View 1 (spheres, helix red, strand yellow):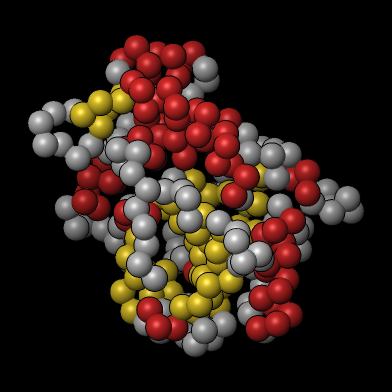
View 2 (cartoon, rainbow, N blue to C red):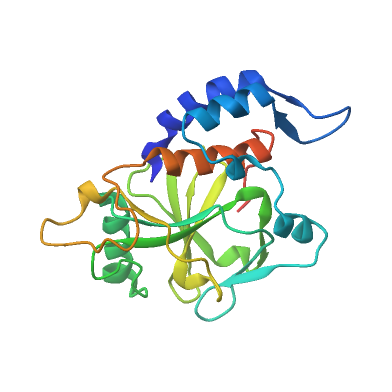
Length: 232
């Protein structure tokens, strides 16, 4: 999923130029009406650009949260927002990492029978590690890769994927409690095995489509284009 950065940077270059502070001392930014019109003309649904949904406001006031936990329950994260989106990724890297976890660590499967990996994406500033930070270990396919996958070593459970240059975290679907929004799309399907035939219940994209990029961009705009660093 790391290949989305170049496209996002191109998309956000203009957005950065047009974004400005919404008021003195405000940590949030808004997008000028003229630019919103341009995004709409480009096919970006305007609801993706609202910085705060009703659910997010409730969450900010402390009325909602969920726990993402490993199999044995020692490693726990709190998540205090609605997800950015839920996607299944078919890239070679996600499939390779998932198979390595199973083969080398005896981890529960994260790669489905159709070769996809089911993720739910959240803003980094809405996720906190609340238990057992010493039981988290990172896994990178290459030492210099900007993408790392976090494993709970207490029970060898894959927890999440972090693109370290991004503003979001991708939790493995199985680590989250119900209810979870329905799958919205499948991405990077060009990398799937030739023997796999995907259903048409949701859009299937050979790469990272504009719809995917816009959702990430909208969440980033709501964060004032910050990219928080995680401390674990």
